[in-house]
Image 1 (cartoon, rainbow, N blue to C red):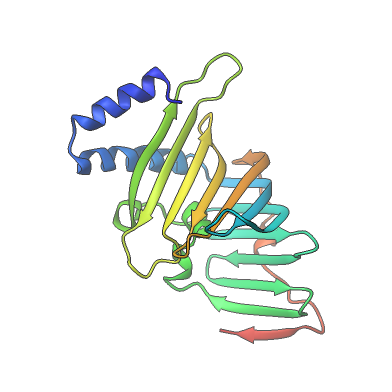
Image 2: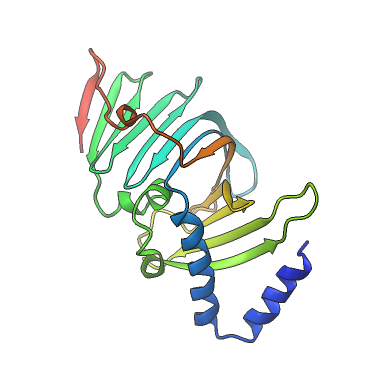
Length: 214
């Protein structure tokens, strides 16, 4: 369901080499991400297996801020909190009464959260980027841009990541892993480039919980 502009884009891409088309898509995505210094939103996450059967559905709240800081909290019955200050990552599972602490190594820096909150200058080096949908805004209808990112590293944590932008604002993500499992995240009441509570990114370990260092 492409607009005339999207069809024109496709025609232009057919006239270009794949490398040029990839650079143009990467440049567009880079521009959209560069304009997003922070994000605060509610979200709905759904996980489907390769056959499309629903495995899990959770809701929660997230806050991202460059460079490398994020806060992610899901609600019951799958309560979990994940926090990073750009150097350390904490994963708190209240049901297990356990906090896992990790240093943000290169593997963790390649996760979608770090892609959105971290350094985007390395986008071309790490991903093949394709613009798979682009529509112009119409009366009462938002402009839509959808990008697909495929990691160049063979040991990546995911096979494919789709980012959807409505009116140039991030609205949804879709993650596909090596087993075909699909994780979709839809954002609600998203606020961009607003003042952020910095204490969110400094996790305080609760009393009487186990701490696991990795």
